[in-house]
Every structure is written in structure tokens, then in C-alpha cells.
Length: 216
Image 1 (cartoon, rainbow, N blue to C red):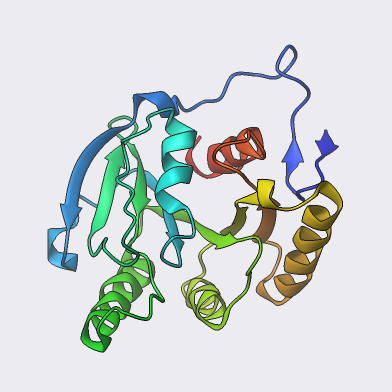
Image 2 (cartoon, rainbow, N blue to C red; image 1 turned 180 degrees about the vertical axis):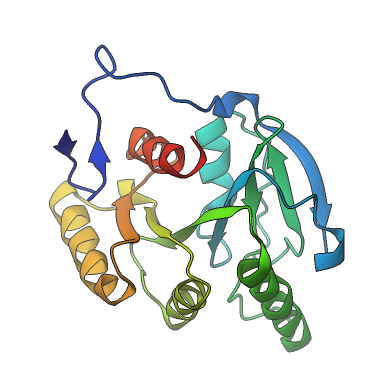
């Protein structure tokens, strides 16, 4: 098995690699919730996508599923205030958590985000892992670290996906991934990092393989 520059183990090329056990292109919108009591039944497996506002969560989900408008993107940071669930099949789901850290979001809304997402991370038995998305040009901010601490406290495996990787040259991109991997060392073997671009096919297969390990 080979290891890519982005730090995620990869399979041989597609001619020799087994098919993914999950068909991400079958994703469909399931439900949006604003309170823990409204979450869908806690069974099967799901992977949550979390990150700062405009870190590229929705774009990553859309690229993964091949559906340009499955997860709604917005030019207004902080607009998404709900937890959005997307069903892959009867037992597996992707979850789009509200973005965090936008300065213009009222403090009361920030507290609501913490209460909702915190309880979700702590209590959701079907949550197999958390994809933490960070702009590769500004990784491991104070808020990112707070989310990682939350995941560690809840014993959730983490895949740090450094988005917008096409904005950096290859050498600089690899250096940032290495720096982030070093920053994740304190979070244990269950925390990994990789580079990703929704538009340039960087890290798409590696992201799929990471999710397969949790969902497949």
C-alpha cells in the first residue's frame, strides 16, 4: 500500500483497486435539524463534516458525491445554522454541521452552535468519525483546535482535510500537511491530515478511502 504526500494511505491505481464499499453518488438529502431531539434515529453509521465558515464543507461534500447542489453553498459565511443529514443508503449517512467562527454571527448564535454541535459530538452513537475541514492557507486556528479538543474528549476519530489545496504550490502544500500532522500528534493515531481541492481533483480518492474506513 502506498502513502500519498497528503498523509493518507492509498490503494493501488484504479485498475487494481477494489471498488469502494459505499456509493457516494447515491447520496440524497434526508433532513435538517435545529435541536438534538429532532435528530434522525441513532443507528447505522455516519460521518460528520465540520469546519469554519467558508472552509469548503459543502463543496467537499458535493465533490465527494458528484452532486453540485446536494449541500447548499452560500456566499454569506455563517448562514448555515442547521445540522443537515444526507442518506447514502438505509444505514449510512453524511452530516453537514453548521460552520463556525464567522465574526458577524451574533454571540447568541455562536453559543447555540456550541450547544447543538457539542451535544451531537458527545452523544451520537452512530457517529463513526469527524472530517474537520480547514483552509490550507490558515489551518489550526484557535477555533479549529477547540473543535479538535471536543472530538478528542468525545473519543471521535478525526480526518483533517486541508481544503483549497490548489491555491498552494505542490512543495508548500506538502509542507503545510506535514505541519498540521505534527500539530495533530497530541490527538493520537486516530487523527490524520490530507490535502484536498474540490475543483482540482486533489485528494478526492484519499478522502473516499478515509470515509470508507469509517462507513464501509
